[in-house]
Image (cartoon, rainbow, N blue to C red; front, side):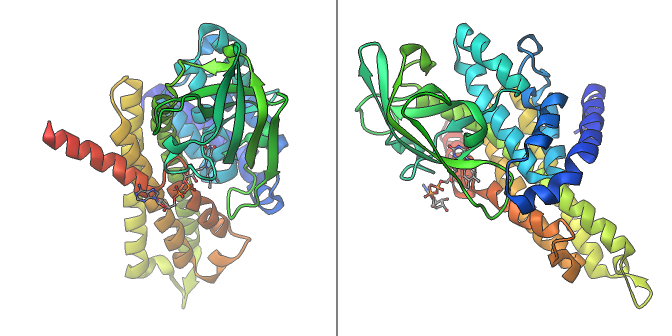
Amino acid sequence: MELTDTQKKFQESVREFCKQEVEPHAARIDQKGEFPHDVMDKVADFGLFGCVVPKEYGGLGVDTVSYAIAVEELSRVCGSTGITVAAHNSLGVMPFLLFGSQQQIEEYVPPLAKAKEGLSAFGLTEPEAGSDAGGTKTTGVRDGDDWIVNGNKCFITNAGVAKTLVITAKTDKIPGSRGISSFIVDKDTPGFIIGKKEDKMGLRGSDTRELAFENMRLSADKMLGKEGEGFKQFMIILDGGRVSIGAMALGLAQGAFDHCLRYARERELNNCPITGFQAIQWKLADMYTKIQCARHLIYHAARLEDAHRKFSTESAMAKLYASEIATEIAHDAIQVVGGRGYMEDMPLERIYRDVRLCEIGEGTSEIQRLVIARDLIKRVLD
Ligand SMILES: Cc1cc2nc3c(=O)[nH]c(=O)nc-3n(C[C@H](O)[C@H](O)[C@H](O)COP(=O)(O)OP(=O)(O)OC[C@H]3O[C@@H](n4cnc5c(N)ncnc54)[C@H](O)[C@@H]3O)c2cc1C
């Protein structure tokens, strides 16, 4: 798990940036429940919205391990900022880099890397198609060279602050997951309706919305990749996205652990620090062991991605494990701290709420287990 010198330097600089520019605003972002444009402008200036974008298109062009480190460090101090950056890079920008034509990449990617004119979002989930995203009901019907899109999406991260979105629609009547295609949607397209911002349990500064398409006309050049390949595409996108949600969970867990350890060292009962109690020592040991295991899984999946090797199962395992232990660690951190951990003046209660999403977004824990088990069963049969 040793990082390269370049990765370590990147980690140090992102950590310092987060400490100076993000952490001081995290409580306010949560309490206001509004998208923090001021903080996101600083994140954009630092270049983190262009983590996955090659330098030639104006991004940082860092490797996947470094990108995971960036999401981890941001989430360690502010989950809302972490998910915003993760969704933009992994879900919003990656579809262009992986499936876009040269012309689409040149037109869309450089402004998204800079993130000055708006972010990007990925509209896959629908009211009747979440875990079963292959059951997409949104339709795209040909009209001459154009496509007419009708339907709804829900729970879409960055939807209200996006300049460009990628959405999926069924373009063929074949039943099942085949016949889905991906489209690029510019925010001002007639017939594209952005719904109200969801009021969420956690990650309250992240912008999550419904989308509606009412006879939205898209020209043929707005199709991303080949017609009918949408299902295959979003399975690939989600493999990468799961590394970033795993990194987000890891950052939240590390953040909870940081606060809990600091408090435990200082808290004295009857002139004895609570770190003298074996029950507390065991909790701290278990928490840190789980964090390090999650880190290994995430960096391993990221390294496989960097090496262009198969990493679907590894990213599912990393996301599953990191999100579940992060929930446990947020819980245990409050337990170690006691009553103070329940109060808003410590960030633990915020982390406890923020972390819950990690077991749901980009495939629930149940779906991760299906992905892992299916691969295992296939491997045995081979
Ligand atoms: C804050 C937030 C941000 C999000 N951002 C985005 C985004 O940017 N873009 C996007 O497209 N989506 C986004 N989502 C949607 C997210 O990916 C879905 O919520 C998730 O995939 C689960 O779908 P669902 O909510 O419809 O639950 P359902 O699919 O209805 O699942 C309900 C329950 O049934 C279980 N279940 C379902 N199928 C199976 C099965 N085959 N076997 C066992 N159990 C099963 C699930 O695990 C879950 O426990 C976001 C969601 C949230 C909460």
